[in-house]
Length: 223
Image (tube, rainbow, N blue to C red; front, side, top):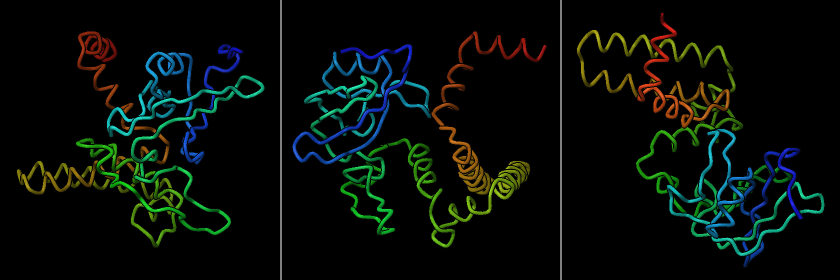
């Protein structure tokens, strides 16, 4: 019973509460994530948006202690039974599956404040909140309105906020600089969400640039 990683480098993982049998979430594992999960006894996944390995609960503390791992009949999907600590969903709900299509309604309440799941990582919290607004009705929020109006409106707002930020810097108005920068960051995150680009990838690029090799590479590109 083995996974053909060459054929399927990422396998879907259905995560189930070992006690209640509730389906908590859907994630993906590559070979390394499965190996880490087996070695530590705690669920590790591969994030397609962040393009990196991550341990469930590494930021929030809401870990998943593994009880059992099952392969499906074709050995290309995993059922993970876990002891879930806290909320499984980044929205603060027990399960990620809380949107009923048949009832067109939210079927469960939050058991945690989403802010508690991210600690000081406000950018990650804001980005995931923006992603939630993608499919909502425009009248529900400004973010949903931006998505409903589409690419041109979102990009126009990014350009407008960038200009206003520049004017604030030029005017040497610190309070306005902070205010306009926050507007620019928010609208930039909306543009990233439009293309499903996680801000973690931006962080990784910035980390790469802080190294000597990154600086030299940037110089060579300019030359």
